[in-house]
Length: 113
Image 1 (cartoon, rainbow, N blue to C red):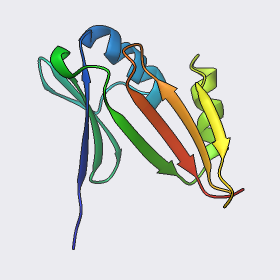
Image 2 (image 1 turned 120 degrees about the horizontal axis):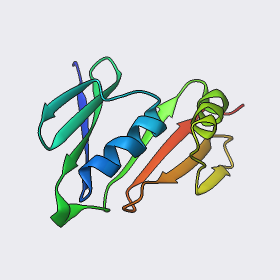
Image 3 (image 1 turned 180 degrees about the vertical axis):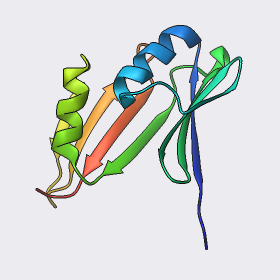
């Protein structure tokens, strides 16, 4: 079965969110879906959308598992964003959590080093 993922992040300040997510993901949005929604395609058939939805802003939680965890975190740090938390689980899996200015939780995970 083929699977596509389209995760949404609600925000109240759309223009500020665009700037922050451009830093987090390291590029402008892959495409602008509408006047209130921008989409980053992180990998084929795997996208994250930031959408102006003030009534739901600040409540998103998502984790993206990557194959080069430390390199990604270093690149994000070079762009001026540091994780609010980092941890390594007993099985060796690594996890870093970022919070956008509205409190949405965006995390990256990586396999044991």
